[in-house]
Length: 251
Image 1 (cartoon, rainbow, N blue to C red):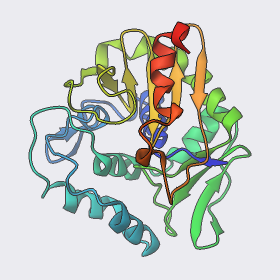
Image 2 (cartoon, rainbow, N blue to C red):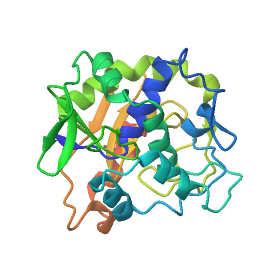
Image 3 (cartoon, one colour):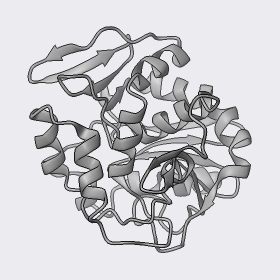
């Protein structure tokens, strides 16, 4: 299995969509932020307080990740624009503590009991696993691992929901607000998914991508070298994946 990083957010967003009768988008989550605002990265806060190493320390300490994320979020600088925010997705994950179970049921590959792997804890299906804390808090900024085939299956099963049912709820992304893969091309956002005019993308650090087009599902799922990751190599062909999906004749 491959750690698909922030593609986890797309899975969380889709579970909120599937269970929207229980988790209504206009329900308040924290500090005047509704579930819908949180899912669409319209929190009013920047991501300045997100520190990966400190977050991992909290996971290892079995901290209450909701309280930790809330305490960091409320001291973040304010923003009136769309802002990618890792902490709010941890709060969303903790607000749906059985999100991994829901994901497994949705995918037809049910989650088992929480199990220890080395120093980490996961709920498992056959082709995926989702990291939790020891006491059972699902991780939200990252944490979902999948096989390549399962990532494609996730895209195929999500396609109609994401491409068709999300249209009325998408929010605009300011042109300079996203600097990752697809920068300058991604125009809208909905529940963990990025959009161009025709296609949708679930994106994980650094260049993990599930692409949904009207006619197909394409994936770029790979083992990242964390000692020298793709962010250090601007000429790596992986950076061209979204460009190739958008203009197939150039691939």
